[in-house]
Length: 418
Ligand SMILES: Nc1ncnc2c1ncn2[C@@H]1O[C@H](COP(=O)(O)OP(=O)(O)O)[C@@H](O)[C@H]1O
Ligand SMILES: O=C(O)[C@@H](O)C(=O)COP(=O)(O)O
Image (tube, rainbow, N blue to C red):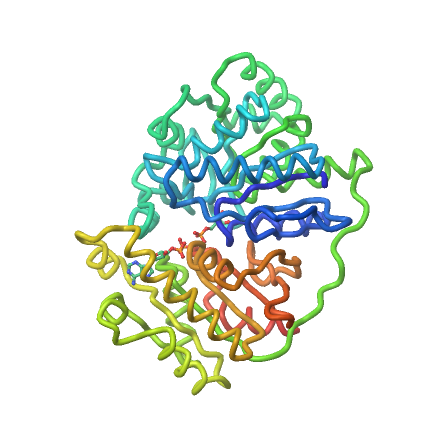
């Protein structure tokens, strides 16, 4: 294995796998730290963890376990993947994990590059934008788990603790790979290992990737991976590319626990032509809706591409959060989807479309999936994936909350089966 990646959630990991696969690397997404060695021919391994919203110490420990496994596979370079909207809280987990990985690898001047320009996320003057809005005015300030209330990535990382953060300004990035390499080398003399990198276009990320060919650790959104396959190709290290996609036929179910603006529009669009079961927190807490009842509803709507959703608008999310323990709240939603996914697959579902990172993590973990093959891109940042569940092929699309066109659910179902 050439490139060892650690993703802090499952959708984000599939976004990264998508970028690397499109760059020509043979990729496998692992669901948690594998027990055995990576499959033959795997050039980029992405260990997907569910560490975005757990206590920082837990995230650090799990990430170090993933790193140890990736090191045992002989990787030359490591990448810590987090969200392009920098999903985290003042307590962590991006800085604590990045710093722990840097310490373990003795890495200095570690780039922090959440930008994903194709989807409008850019970093300028150390601030993260979504389209023409600052992150804190983009809708992410109302995220159920990690409200992003400060767009200054340097300040946000400072709040998460550790040494002061450095900044690589746009003027240096625009000057190209040699200028970036030189500046990172200067910054490496300083003990502060994290360097927030201004990157406003794919070309910036490609230059940053090229400049970082010899850096042992990178961190960022999937954009940071845009330039990396070329480094390995130039070194003559890439052989294969992905195996051909094998479509998966059979019943399809969609599950949505994401409350993002994009997902809510996709749920509304799906509802125009397909059956949607909308489930509220009260439904779950008062036992009006259970996984078994939702499964009955799915069975009755098999032909129509059924979608079960808890996606809710910011006011409903705020009301649900009010005075409640966050972990218990998440457990209620995620436990519901986890059990429902188990029932749906046991009932013969062969294509599963899931919206939301935490939701996807809960579903994939509940299904006990081990490794995912990466197929064609459905929408930017979302690949079709294939695995085995209960001895049968399972097509899987794990959609990041904010990704995908309005017709995503129907499109994903069709792509998995094509
Ligand atoms: N109706 C709701 N009210 C409050 N919180 C919700 C609701 N539905 C889902 N959630 C919570 O929101 C979280 C969404 O996170 P996630 O699945 O990662 O979506 P995204 O990818 O948009 O961040 C879930 O883990 C769940 O705990
Ligand atoms: O970088 C991104 O935006 C995605 O890859 C990602 O991490 C998405 O996470 P969720 O929005 O929580 O699904």
